[in-house]
Length: 231
Image (cartoon, rainbow, N blue to C red):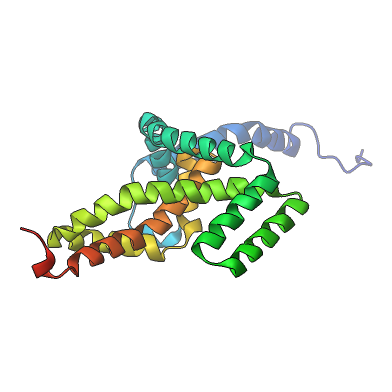
């Protein structure tokens, strides 16, 4: 009799299909082992242009190795910057904002005149009325901390470059790259190495602002007339 459901007779095609399905994991495992052996056999020249070269994994492994082995160094660099930034921020937020506005206005009047003092006072009052006084002081603390470390590093470095022509030639490409590369390019690795927070922002600002200070210090010393230099 014919099967009304159109099923294949037992022991014929059904057995073959069942056997194929049961053998599928073994075949997949064999294929996986073959691909693993091919991957472990080394890279080939065609991987340079077919996109299969594992550059991403190399970069991730290298970055992980740097973070794991140089963590004490990064913590040592981070500690003084973080302490200085915290101290300046606390000092700026310790006084009430009307007193700080008066202090900044007096400084502006002393160094630039009455017009700039009035503009400074009006701007700071507007900042306080907008409710962003604390954020503004944190930003100012970031700038002051960056300025402090730029002076501590840039002035001695500029003096050293002024005393050596070879050192100036060697550091010039590095200073050019630091000054022309956008800050967001090296912000990502700095955040990976030093963590998320205000310290990476200070470091990025230092890297961007350091080259002009070094160059100007070097140039200023080199342009001093020789008859003015004491023996």
